Image (cartoon, rainbow, N blue to C red; front, top):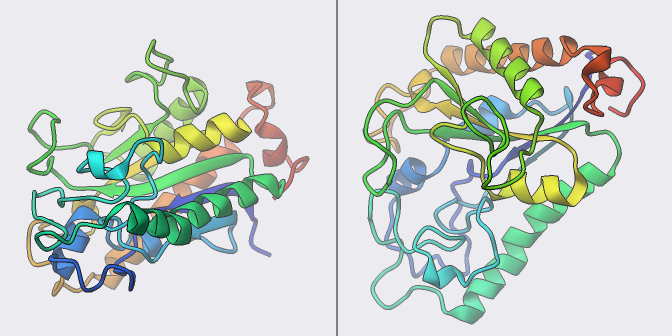
Length: 284
């Protein structure tokens, strides 16, 4: 029997679907959807049957971004839940057809809140000891990014802390630094020599990991995987490029191997509240 690990995997940006409520309003192409989203992450991180829970959405990130806070009016933030432009600056909607307040509330009610309710339900079920918010990133910052130019790392693992995973004055970490360091070591073993495994740079973690950690206090880590691992050129015509199935299978195998190695390496005395499940005394 395959060992099931007490992990929750959130995959919020893999979708390509434009929901019917806005289909007659959008100005973007499938290539725009893929460029701004996390293409193929549903296949790469989709470890159903081997983890406690795996939650994904079919809705395109550029239409409803599950990893943005609902606290501020979305129409005030071009990169909020309901975006005005792609990460390349392409208008998402035709002129004068950006959703009004009522339509935005409808999108949130039908797609955004159910995603987060699914995460809450998985966390409340009792079998999750550690959660991962799973993403991919472009090899270089997109045009609208405020990030410094230059190549990005192979993986970025984030807990809201500094480059060693330690707390900063800007907020609480979503995972203990020692856990994040152990996870980074496992990824270095699985992807040795292929690139940097960075902590909290260029990403420190998003709304999903921060909000659900605060609500349930189950540790969260955001994983960002460089798209150069499975795309020849992330700026090419993504809508027509077919993925290399052998590459996808190999990538899945190595990522899961890293998660396994990390979990099995946790010491009894870690004091994190998650190691009991690793030794058969928790849910999963």
